[in-house]
Amino acid sequence: MEQHFDHTTKAGVASGTILTVLENISSQDLVKTTLLAAVGAFVSFIATLILKYIIQRFKK
Image 1: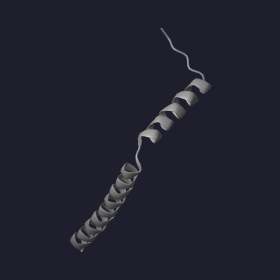
Image 2 (image 1 turned 90 degrees about the vertical axis):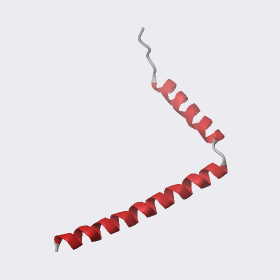
Image 3 (image 1 turned 30 degrees about the vertical axis):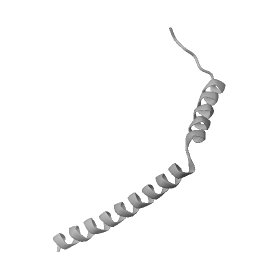
Image 4 (image 1 turned 90 degrees about the horizontal axis):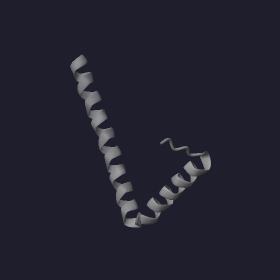
């Protein structure tokens, strides 16, 4: 059995899913996620700088 979805059905499903997810996210979760993303980006940046420094030291 083949199902056929038109663009309005896909848009309805997508927007319904997004609204349901947004409704269930609390502000504390949003703050926690933002903070963890910032810490992760900072650690990744520092690790990249350290690795570049180590590689340059070995190339000399």
